[in-house]
Length: 214
Image (cartoon, rainbow, N blue to C red; front, side, top):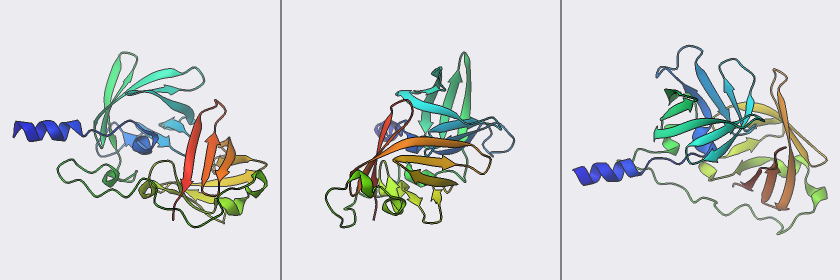
């Protein structure tokens, strides 16, 4: 019995952008304004009703927030719970039901069969020139991890994140811009590696490789 409990505890999810994606709250019922919204598209964290702030994973249990790189500790307890540390203050935060489903990180006792990290992409030319990086090139599903958590570029100019959040997108001269109705926007450099792979580079030089899903 003890051996089984130890094995289950060992399967704690890793701190990744995909794990963080979505809304978290200090209240298990997700009631009130003490919420934290991680966007994998914008690479931002929005606390309550404040403005979104850039973040980057800076360690196994830490993110750096904003241009100053303010450290925030994030200790994963399980697939839906973290301990957040800001300075000397620590509080538990919980994943909200409307966020990226817990099924992405199934309970160790009954793991769901995970799809291959990158299923064979649609048949396409092996290489692509920079001039081929057009809006139509991006239409469809893309992921930085596995196709179970892919985001979708739609022809109508909207992008749907894996957690269901929808934002606007536009591509021009190698720059990809995501925007919200509130007026908030974020622009990154987009570089095509081949017909099924792109790299997204933010203003800090961080590179995220994304691959096309079927």
